[in-house]
Structures are given as C-alpha cells and as structure tokens.
Image (cartoon, rainbow, N blue to C red):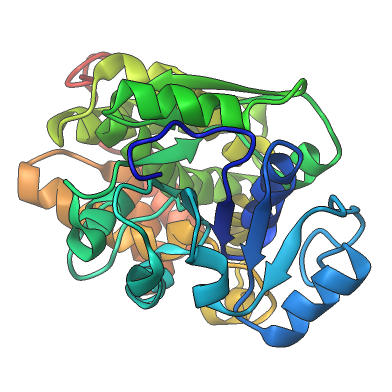
Length: 343
C-alpha cells in the first residue's frame, strides 16, 4: 500500500486456496485485481484453466479475472493487500516465506480462526512477529461465514477488525458486495479470540448432536459456550460487546448448528464413538478447534479462567474420555448463578 489508499486498482494477494480462502478471493476478484496462491502447482494450474477449485467448492464457478499461482513471489510481489487464508499450524511458516516479497506498509489480513500451538499466539500476533507490527497494518476478517453459502451468493455479514480506522474502512469497501456486508471493529483481540474459541465450543455442540440429544441440549451448550469464551476473551483483553456480535455470537451459532461446519462434524463423530484419528483420516480440510482446544485450556489456566466445556473437549479429543462421560461431568458441576463471571 505504501501509504496510499486501497482502491479498485489495488492488487490483492489471497494466500491459501482452501474453502474460505477461495471464497474470499472470489469476493475480492470482483472488486480488484486478485491473485490466489495455492501450495500445489497442479491445483493453481487447474484453477487458472477451469476457473473452479476442484479440491474445495468444486461446484462453484470462480470469476474469470481471478488468477492463481503456486509462486508466493508472484502472488505477493506488488500486492497492495495480503490476505492470509492459511490454517494456524502453517500460518507462520508461509508468512515467513512470503515476507521477502512484501512491500513496506502493505496491510496483512488473517482469515484463520485458530491459535498457534507452543506460543499460544493469535494470528495477528504471529503477523507482528514475522513482518513487524509497526511496518504493516494487520487485522482479521471474521464472522459467521460458511464458504459454500458465500459462494452460492447467499446474504451474509462479517467484521474486519483493525486498530487503524482508515485501513479498516478501505478494507471494508474492498470486501463488501451487494450480498456480503462487512462491518468494522477496532477490537482486534476480541474478534480474533471469538473466532478461535467458538470452534472449540462447536466441537462440544457436535458431540451432543452425535449422542442424539435435542435442541434443548444444543441451546444450553451454545449459551454456556458463549459465556465461557466471553470470560476468557475479556480476560485476555477483548471487549465484552464484541462477543455478542457477529464475530462472537454470530459465528458461534453458525458453527455450532451448521452441517457444513468441520468442527461440529468432528464433535458429532466423537459423540458417535469414533476416535479422533479415525475422524481426521477421513477429512481433507482442517478443523481448527482440534488443535486450538489445548491452546485454549492452557491460556485459560494462565489467566485463571474456568473453561469447563473446553476442558471436557480436550479430555475427549486427547485423553480418551467418552463424550457421554464428558456431558455427565459438565452436568454434575456445582451449581452457581447464571451470570457468574460471564464478563
């Protein structure tokens, strides 16, 4: 960007050709020249040739103007905006590869809804580590955004969170279409944490679905999950109202109830008695909540916040606990006021 405003002539690089990266690239390609980076050369070539992503969202046409490449240098060189659609476990390494080609001042926007194992960092913190927090405006695009519905042109809303209001407003215009409404928010910490934490709660919601429980149980898990992620999010610096908005409640509901949700699917299969290894072997896309769950519990312990649902999700995922026993453990916890420690 180099200090100039983002415009319809700006070049946008979307890094990561998974389902959400592809959907965002399709949105932006209708607004500005856009390049989609795919790790696999054969996938990039197929996208360029057929204007479809055969690996993800194969039933949807991509804009003819969208270019694809497997070269990070080609994608990032000359870009005025870089959008990182890479899962949390590969986010740092890909951004490190892209860094030499990134011009000073170019905004970097994360699409990832996860936390980095080991460092416990949010993706915008990783961006700051790798390219310099002062050198590049950085933020997150997040909300209840299931990629298939976006590609089908169904109305949806999202949030672009950045501390720089001017850049946030430029990005808002870049991402907004007649069916994709984008709001701005300066609470980067809250928006980013909400997106990561809701995936863990979606695994819990899926578990109760897999065990055959009904709407009452699902509603209880979603509501108490919101209280839980709000407690931790506020303790880590997020603003309480963020968690009742699109990045919080909106994304939580969509992820907990949708059969398109990978995290809900993992929970559902756990609730039916399958092991994590069996479930992951059948999936070609990442369920961020699987890795994030342990980071969440570690972060909660660090700041002294109770996370009973997240703790039970970790116990089922990694400690051999049955989903039914996890539900029992939650139901037998000591009774307390509903709003106790919610924010």
